[in-house]
Amino acid sequence: MEKSDILAALTALGHPLRLDVFRLLVRAGQGGLLAGEISAALDTRANTMSANLSVLLNAGLVTKTRQGREIRYFADLEHMGGLLGYLMEDCCGGRPDLCQPAIAQIARPVPELSQS
Amino acid sequence: MEKSDILAALTALGHPLRLDVFRLLVRAGQGGLLAGEISAALDTRANTMSANLSVLLNAGLVTKTRQGREIRYFADLEHMGGLLGYLMEDCCGGRPDLCQPAIAQIARPVPELSQS
DNA sequence: ATTATATTTTAATACTTCATGAAGTATGGA
DNA sequence: TCCATACTTCATGAAGTATTAAAATATAAT
Image (cartoon, rainbow over all chains, first blue to last red; front, side, top):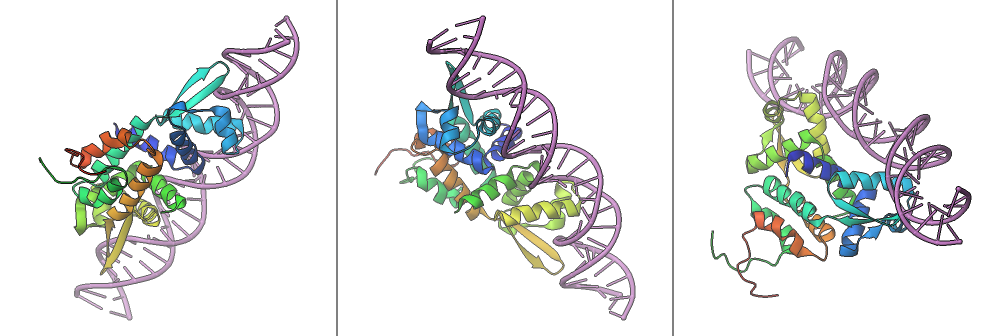
């Protein structure tokens, strides 16, 4: 993952509506959500939402597929994983222990270290 | 950690110079770096750097202490950990397995699961 | 074909962010 | 007290980003 991709993802998520959209899509899971459902859920005009969805799309954080005249959006969790990997590697670098509180929230705590 | 804090941190890091500054400070570790050293290392005017350091400061990602007439900056890894925790919890939510590739980069891989 | 629905694109305006030169503040040394 | 050094603040113009109404596109239904 290149630095420009990281910057695009951080910039995309650093906007209140887009952060909400992304979290909504994460919660929606594999079923995703239609553009209209997203607009309605977050009480936002269709064209405003479209512009913001396209920022998330260009940042690689979401994907879409057309279904008839509707368009369904999905969170791309693999891409999100790549962003987190970069942040943890480069921005907690050398001191992974200090990021452990964050990791512990989601990952099963490492019980014992068995190999370097 | 409030949503506004998350947005401030994402916005602060979503800028090429500030991302570099933060990573530099992470690498510098507990010793931190002087404002002038940061400017020199990243070949940036003092006032431009000062403005960007203050964005990182307001976002809670760095701290500073005055030492005589110099000012020393430090990365705040705890704050970074809080950001990562939020992103993993809320933005990989429900599917921690999909964030595992990211976690695996930094955390020692879990050898066996020994407790739920 | 015509019309309706779902979404995007365009173009305009309002607003925010950015880097910069110039000026200001704070500390230390002569 | 005066000057030098380290850093920040201020004011400004240029560039970028956001939201909106209106127009355009694409598909579906009649």
